[in-house]
Image (tube, rainbow, N blue to C red):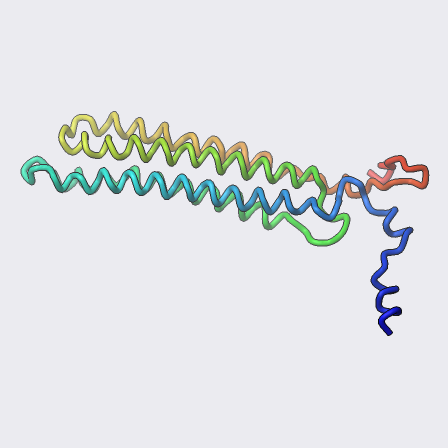
Length: 200
């Protein structure tokens, strides 16, 4: 019985030749890494930006109460909100990558894997940079805006341009992530050992 089971599990030589060289079994690894890195780096940027901005917001308590305006405290939450968007951008790309992946042989190409890995790194690292920028500018900007309210408009512009970096990464990642290389899975290796893509 064991020998019969082993014989059934042994791949047929003809089926092995029908597999596409552009769609190996390890191709989904790159796609999963792209989805993971998009979310991880995006959340790292969001966490850092939220942390530093919140620290700056808390230091307002050390200022004299007569110099602290209630509306200014509420306005100073803006860098915290913008930092949280970094994680959302990473989540969007991670969901898109995960939903476009298929299990099974000749279903997912290396082209798609590399594209999804590149998309994940693009949005992840861009939003990590955004979180760093918002964290540093948010901490100092919140404190100085509380001391001098006239600085608030300038700080909003700085925070806006800092958050735009993550948006640029999201746009490029969306363009890259929708690239499909499924057609490459129709290429096979002929008996002569050459790649045959006549099925495209």
